[in-house]
Amino acid sequence: MFRSKYKISGMDCPSEEQMIRMQLENTEGIKKLDFDIPNRSLEVFHSHKNLDQINALLDDLKMGSELESSESADETALEDAGQNQRKILWWVLAINFGFFIIEFTTGFISRSMGLVADSLDMLADSFVYGMSLMVVGSSVFRKKKVATLSGYFQIMLAILGFAEVIRRFMGAEIVPDYKTMIIVSAFALLGNSVCLYLLNKAKSKEAHMRASWIFTSNDVLVNLGVIVAAVLIIFTNSNLPDLIVGTLVFALVLRGAFRILKLGK
Image 1: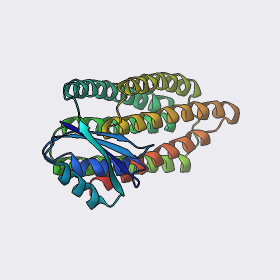
Image 2: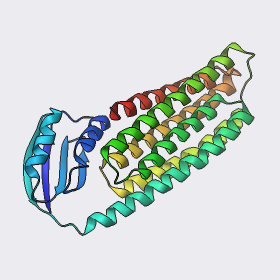
Image 3: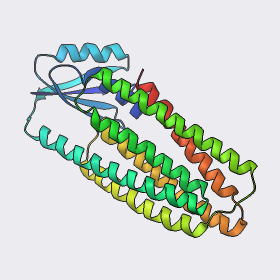
């Protein structure tokens, strides 16, 4: 097996990383793709026969790819790394789905749009994680179909969320229970912090692990936003901070949906 390192000047975000992954990963002989977005580099672990094919596929993307080196590499650690990543993703999926149930239930009980929005954001993340796990090792065509399905699912959640925010804004003002918001969001923050620890521990730069890290980092910011909204409710005795946070969360979900749909094209 060989390890070829490329400099890709046009790769500066996870969306472009995923485009490269979909271009390469179904190519026979490629064992692993290791991305480093900050340094705009890619390491391809592959058989010795298809270096020219890899070069041609990267050139087709027109992202300014340049082969820097190609040398022999050890294959023994690849299978163990894949199993470890799958285990971590299952933990992240379980934590996200568990807190979706908790936040969705307590959000309606406490009348907090922020908690409901955060729960739906976690549901969207869980759906993406689950779909990604289902298609590990599948064809690029199937992965594009799953990406498209995930994107439309998130759009549906965002539209429902925006409609609920408008309904609450136009209706009679109901001040949420700020104590429940703070307690539940603090536990969700702890859960997402554990997820970040597990993902960082994996030390993987592959697309699915990097995407999981990005999703979870956004969730941490959302948790903090709900806590801030709860504190503002104490001083304002208004539901407006809660509705603002809910709107921002659904905007994040919608933004993520369009990025996923772009990957499915």
